[in-house]
Every structure is written in C-alpha cells, then in structure tokens.
Image (cartoon, rainbow, N blue to C red; front, side, top):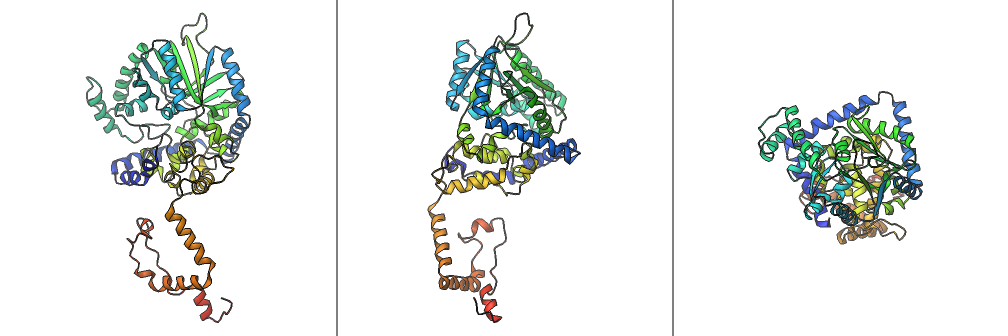
Length: 477
C-alpha cells in the first residue's frame, strides 16, 4: 500500500464517523463483547496470573523461535505433514497454487485465516481459475459483498441482521428475504454444506503449532474449520512463523485466555488438534496435509528486542474491542488487513512506517489496549517507538521505511522552534507577539487548522510567565 492510500485514514475515519448505522452496529457489538469478557474474569488475581503465564509462554517461544521452527518441521514431517517455507506473500501464494494445480484442484473451501487475508489469497487463486470460498459465516457474508474483514475475530461485525438479510436475498439464488437469524444461518449452511462435499481442497489457519508433537491447533465455533480440514481430500494450513509454541501443555492456558478475551466464552465450540493426514483404517480426514509457514517481515520484527513483543499476539481482538478509536470508526477505516491497535503496530512494521505514517498516529495512546491484552503487548510504547522511527534514520534499526515519514515542512518547523528557543531575545519577541496578537489568528489558519478541526482554538495568555514574574519584582528572568 502506498503512502497516498495510507494517508487516507483520516478521510476514512471521517466517513465512518458520519455513518450513524455503522456506529450503532459497532457500539452494540463492542458493548456486548466488553461485558462478556469482563464476566469471564471475575477474579483480578486469576486474570493477572493467567496473563503472566500466557505472556511467559509466548515470550519463551519467541526467544527459541528458530529452534522451535526446526523442531516443528521435523515432527510435522514425521506425522506425514508436508512443510513449506515462504519468505513473502507472493512466494506463499505460488506455493499454494502449485500444490492445488498438482492435484488438479479447481475448488477450495477456506476456514478462517487472517494469514490468507494478509496474502490476498482469494484474489490470487481466482486469477488462476480456482474458486476460493470462505466457509466461516462472517467471512462468507463479506465475501458476498466483495469486502474485507472489519474485525479479526468477527469479520462482519460492521453489519446488522437487516443488512445481511438484504444481502442474502440479493446474492444467494432463490433466497427469500428474512431477518430471522436462525433462518439466515441455515441458508448459508445449506450453500456451504454442498461446497464442503464438492471441494477439491480445504484451507485453514493455525492458532498454535506445537513443536514437540507436530500438532496444528485450530480454534473455532462453527464447525466449518473442521469441515474444511477433514472433508476435502487435501488440507493446506497457513500460519505466520510466530505461532509456534514449545509443548502441547502450553496450549491450554493460551486457549483459555484466547477464548475469554476474544468472545467472552469459557471455551470455544471446537478445538481441533491436527497431527497428520488420514491414517490407515480411519474413516475421515484428508489424504494429504500441507503446512505453509509465512515470514513476510516477521523475522525482521523478531530481530528487534522491543518490537519482538508484537509477535506475541494470539489474534484475540480484545485490543480492538476496547480501543476508543476502533470502536467508533471500525476496521475498514484502517485500510489494512489487521485493523485496530495490533494493526497499528504490525502493519507499519510489515509495509513500512513511512507508507503507513498516518496509521501509527491513529491512536490516543490511552493504554486501554495494553490493559486488556492477554499477552501483555506494550502497544502504546511500540507505537511511540514507530512514530520516532518514521521520522528518524537510526542506523542500527531494522524497521522498514525508517525516516521516510519525515516531511520538509515538519523539518523546518522544528528547526524554527529550536532557533527561537536558543535565542532568548528572539524567544521574548515571539512570546510578546503571541500574547498580544494570538487571539487574532483565525481557527482556519493553516498553522493550527488540524488542531482546531476537533478542538477549541488555543488562546494565549495576555502576558507570558516571564513578564508576570518580572512585574512581581523577580529580576532573574
């Protein structure tokens, strides 16, 4: 995404704020999610201990990342899972296309996967004559409208049942208009069930990959993930390389805090543990399982001790649900695969802090995201770091696009500010003019227009502090 596109966050947010239906949809959903999450953690001490344990597991995993990835490959291979490595999204897409073409696959059903969204896999496959159908209900809804997810857990969060009812009646053949949620769900299920049976291949994401056993863990609520991975003869799993954990016992606490933080559930409906293709004598399961492990800038993030904390994320979406910016403008305003607070630190690191300069400033730095993050990612601190990286060129830094967010006008503004502060006579003259004529500056003036768009115009005092002190007899100023 180029800088011109990224810079449109302000405009996108303004459009979202002027849409009363969108704001009502988000307010209702966010209030419910926050309430449910709070109900799952009645004891602050238990929550603190579980967060600390989960943070420790993820941090330890990242410290041992190269070793664990090698162990994962060895054990997956022993289990019959074919492992593929992709440095970029383009390489991952080509790998998946090659696997599908080698089997003559023309149809693919997909369980929920944010990594496949990151790869823009659907559009890539469709460009090569392969139908990719989303089987998660939320993903299916937005796919019908040609949209991208607005939330990493609930992709169609921005729509209400009336909007979905109109969409189904227009986009699904022979569908009648109904606002009954059960009927709408049944309608989508009827379409998808047939696709599961007809599909040549299935694709899923990976919530956690266990190095010691070569097990792929998939958390879901609808059963579509299990259908995508077990019914078609070919299963392809895609994951970011940070999803690996050392031991199977590490999954339990992460699973417990993931479901509670994401949807306010004590447990999800399904937890799938996939350790290989169909065995001899087994009645279901794929004949082949492939695992594609994607880098896409993650190894560069991992190399920085502070920014590495970004990779602890378990994709629960709690930071979004509590963010005062996201909850008012929604995910589409960010124009990124990963919206909200986690997207504000992950996307600039992947695409470049210069290209996404506007995104790293789309935060009030209130700290609500860090307070609820189940793995204690210091999002505000990382945002401040990235803001600095965008305008400074630190030789030791590995951040992509460092220094490219700097502008000539900002440079000169700070130089002028420094020049004034270094010269007492000039500083006194500047403050004298500000106190006497500052009120005359119109709110629409370019110098302060960005501030006064959402705030009251600052009014300078009639006398500076130095003048007041001198008037009271202090001769040291």
